[in-house]
Image (tube, rainbow, N blue to C red):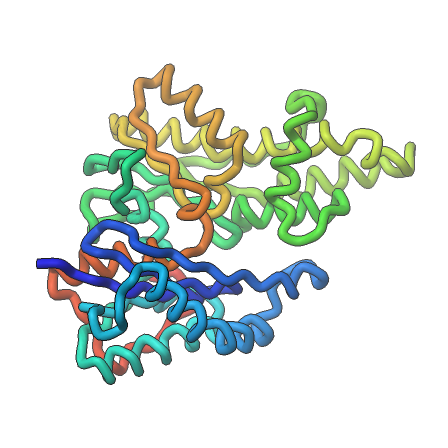
Length: 337
């Protein structure tokens, strides 16, 4: 039986809709909100208003691109959380209304679970992880190591106790004078820099947990002192500063991932989330994988950032398990795991 899933993602500032035929991606349309850049971050009220403007055209574009009619859809999957409440409500309301009108199943999806299961979207260029596997989930709001035993059997074994890796990239970028979002700009600038030029204090905590607040403070105070000596220090050393802070963040992420993989004797390793697109993180992971004989799984750029294809793939596997949601389901803003 062919199953058509409409996925809807509206957890932050990207409005996205995707169509899957079983586990094969037919379309994945994303509308970004560039208006937040001038303010250095996402403004929740504006984000929700723009979602309301975008959601119908985005879903229509996804259906057209997939050459599928709304009446062909078998079920509607939507991001229930975590995320910004106003943004989540837009996707939630549309999904409920459409599912009720079409009399088809409604499926709520956890945003973080969706990032992890994005590796199971069928394509011609990559393979899927074998259970159990470890997934380093890194984004602007989350930094976690997940032990994934099955599609719906996941456990957080490591998490940040304060700031996320993506937030650390963005805060460092702001200090360096880059616009929001600054993480990709650090990645680009770092390509011409020396990652060993400067060093910063990194947290050393037990287990598989992370802490990035100290690293951010170390970076800030280092620049404060250097700017007193030379007001042009940042501009004269920007590439080296980018490369050095990027290395500090990536080394911290991978150190705990290596420890977890060694302790649990797992060689199936995946990364997911927006920060997984960082080129230095990917290159370091590939180098470690060669030494450790890991099988690694890195999402494409389109599937690393927020998108509806990852929501749809969770919807597909929930559909196979008859795991449907009530029309009374409400969004949630905090991580459920």
